[in-house]
Image 1 (cartoon, one colour):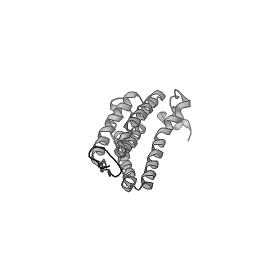
Image 2 (spheres, one colour):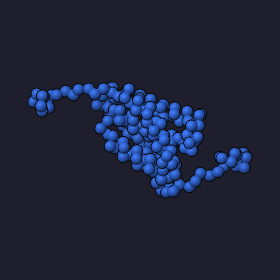
Image 3 (tube, helix red, strand yellow):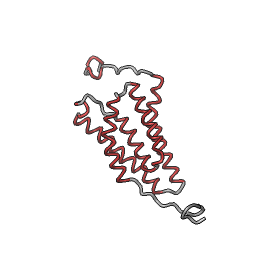
Length: 171
């Protein structure tokens, strides 16, 4: 099959990247989050935190199901294109990974916010998506992820007071 017989939408080359040298960084962000989450599972297992070691991957699968499910719905229904937008599956997966991490390690939110803003700025700067695409994707994916997070978030377990001192604690 020659290039001339392909539909014109497939034969058109994508626009060139604005800064090809930083493209590998954009491509590495989501896999790096995956490695981070895997490392947290291993660390939880080694520390004897079995609930986290099993719960974190299950939570990730559920969050990724939300992200990919919404991407599928958008492709099937074409809602985003009706508004001149493009659903960012990479952005949705990125948010799902951070939602998973924050359900188990909520104190990491400043890192999540900083990396997410930097990643979305990088995707917009590279021309992968417009800022509106990314904001719309975050809004559409963020609501179900927030509902999932509030439903599944592990309950805080009281810490043992042994060896700690302070008001109300035995020395």
